Length: 530
Image 1 (cartoon, rainbow, N blue to C red):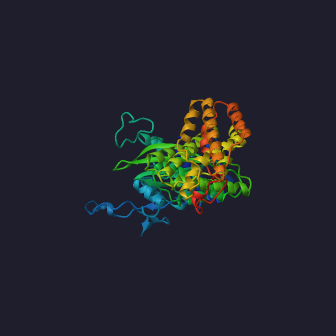
Image 2 (tube, rainbow, N blue to C red; image 1 turned 180 degrees about the horizontal axis):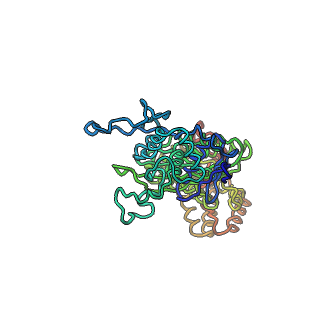
Image 3 (cartoon, rainbow, N blue to C red; image 1 turned 90 degrees about the vertical axis):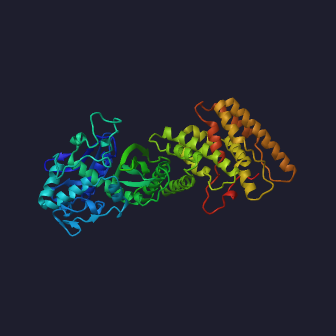
């Protein structure tokens, strides 16, 4: 809100529907960081809220905000001539007070060089070097007051403005050529500079098979100093694999940073709403914009106490270990990674069913892999999964039902548990029922009647096996009649939209309790060994 010659907030409207708007807000906060700004997102805009009104004197020490990027060296045959002279105002390896950088200095400058996006940032520094300090400060002040012009002009670049890429709105805009400049008439130099600064302070990127995956966290309501520190740590994450796996691990890693570094207890999504993920495809001569989407920060638990924080960290560790172990070069595991990424949706009522489906499919894949002798994939824990699912009333009813708990434990004992017992050398393990999970899944798709029929048939066999084990002097377990009736009543009383079979398979392939799966041999972590 502008008030005379001072203001206490700066607004960036969401004009593009891309990370360009987010970068401009982050850049404005970076310029005004001496006023301890806070970035707040609204439906149609970002507001950079200041601790006090901005004065012209606050801008005296503000510089371009980034280094001059040395262009890749040209071949000797092309480097001779008048273009070899250093730019005006440059002394040694620096413009006036502004250091130079090379593409190898850090990943952000590598990205800038690979995408040939350095012309605009370099132009800002070149113009800054030519200007008197007071003229630069005056331009800044006038621009914050609404002046459209700034100290430079440059074409729109897809790294900072994905909407400027050919093909974003049309496959091939009519009447354009390779070097068409008509889109540049929409450029606002001051906003472009803010986006440059926002890129260096608010973005992280990783290369996957020469393609670029650019991540831009979206502030929701967070002090800029805290946000910049989190993004700095976010860039240090070691991510690899295909873009799908990279997305999953990036969101989990960013969420963990939000939980660990928060100065007050609040759910991470209240600080950072999500992350823009933009894919730039390597076309040989250049990279081109391919796709863009938003992934939401998980909204799993409350975060009000130290116990809540520990619950978050345990769950994030569990998910990170499993996603890291999934191999994206195997088609069945790659499909699971794609399904897992779909849980990062803004609406909880849409993300939770996706998580249930993932847990079901992951459990069945785990059972299959272990039958083939592959034990690298760990299990989820019931204690880690249940708190995420139980805020949904129907799921809470299912998971806390004693009949459901007894049946899922029996299925675990006859599938994953029996496998683990055999793998650890126990000869008295239960019969491994390899087709059981598939049969339950098929019955669940068919009807509730078929699900009950299949489950009751399994219960009868399970109890008969328990009688035989007791006669042989072995440990045994059975499902009591009241537990069977509780399960029947549950299945018949739930709404038709509730995927009972999916929840049953998911719970049956999870470990009860919490464990440190990095230290305890996985084959010993079965609760039901009878």
